[in-house]
Image (cartoon, rainbow, N blue to C red; front, side):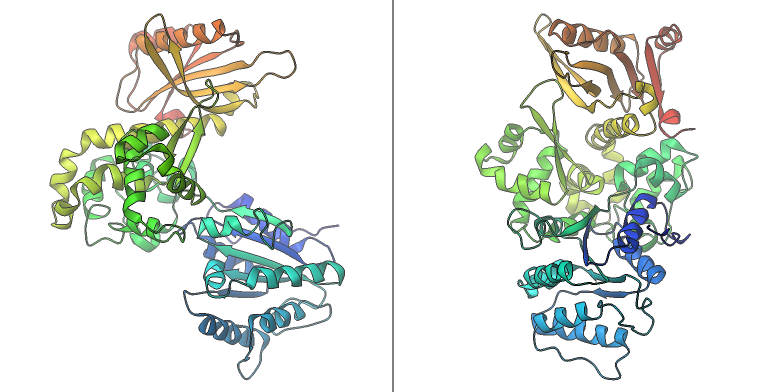
Length: 501
């Protein structure tokens, strides 16, 4: 029977499910070696989390650097010698020797100073593993051989490979990769959700400020403490000054962060092309054809950069829930979207210290290209999480889509939709249709558009008899719409409701 894992330290904010998954992996009572892969974009707090885990569980932690094979092996040898309590540094001739010795420490009955007891699991964390693979491409194969041996012989090894290069980490367990089928844990550390991010920044009492902060910086933990040294706007009135002295200031580490995030991905070579693709999406060209037209390329020519950006978790393709085969792309990192929409077009002026002037003229772009689309994504996150009680326990797909109205010669964009696919002879069921507006007071016209979409979907054979209509607004609702909602049949959800106030 598995014993309870170590308690998460209070200094580790949130990350409860991730901590539980990691401690369960380490403490699982099995006599054979186990492999875990942990990934996530930079600045997500992976290293912070893993160091806390090693402190609580005991074990060996090694953080790789971008170095040659000889230097990487020398650094690893020195770190392992220090962990093992050796008075002199180890001198492994090859990585094969190093891996063999490391797994030898996990043999039953072996005790190392400061390590776990001889009968306890032996945790090993190799952080920034892509650096090691770059220097020694044979490492995954060597680890595979050692893991396979640890499945036959008794071994206490609990090996965690961690890295920020998403394309590299994703490839470790894919297709014909040596480690394919060997991992017992595959964990992606993602940004904080918008509610957790508001708590982390200490602005949950001010939903309007929290929403703007999240639209610019998302849920990346490192930005508050390491990058901004806890410089947080005191209130909504201070947001403009704050953004000018931080994100838009050439003296701030956040100023070039969006560029660094793109450059750090191993598979990205021509950064100009990738920035153009992201700029196309940030400016509202969210289809493959729209992106290709914006950057002056054929659709077939942008397949590779789109795939790389998806593998890097910087871009996501979201299917249209009403039209099979149709999809749109969305930038997943808010800071990159903000950079492409607001900063990049005025880069020279920002470098010249004109942050206040640029920001004063960027209000419309910020609302239309940054805050608006981000608010729509927040509303879908709300329906998936805190607002799931609105759906009567429906497990339908949450997304967005377009409903064509041929009679009116228009297309109705549905920002938040929940659809349950039918099984057997049952029809697909539309559970919820919602529209989200960042800077608009919503009124009866918005409700009528949703009702028309529901009518059209029913005409296509979808089940809509229990479909709720929802209006999401960061600005407010008209009195007429509030009166209609009071009579039932429509949900009004503002920032207060989104943030659980």
